Length: 125
Image 1 (cartoon, rainbow, N blue to C red):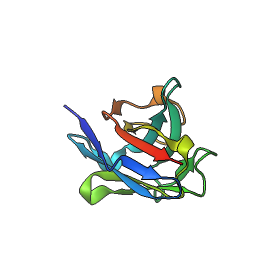
Image 2: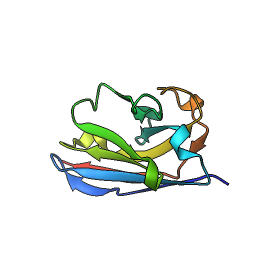
Image 3: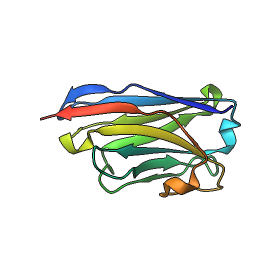
Image 4: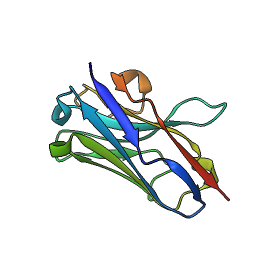
């Protein structure tokens, strides 16, 4: 079955950077929108960023991460990345990658068909 496996999480100080990776298998990766979501303790899962497979890979970001995070994809490696810079304590969460068969990105978790298990990111002040 389809597998999405995240890696790259960890514990860092405020202002530091991390790069998350998500490798996909058994998925026509080049034809899927890929997204990153996060869930902090006691909060609902929220959209972070997505990247389309069409038109050169258009991207969308949550306002809270715009200008600090960057999503990218390498279709040859079936991998999507999330570069996170200038991390803040409020970025602490479990980060999930997700794949959607839609033709364009979506902020809604219900629009995503497959999910990874998540990777923990902890940012201390």
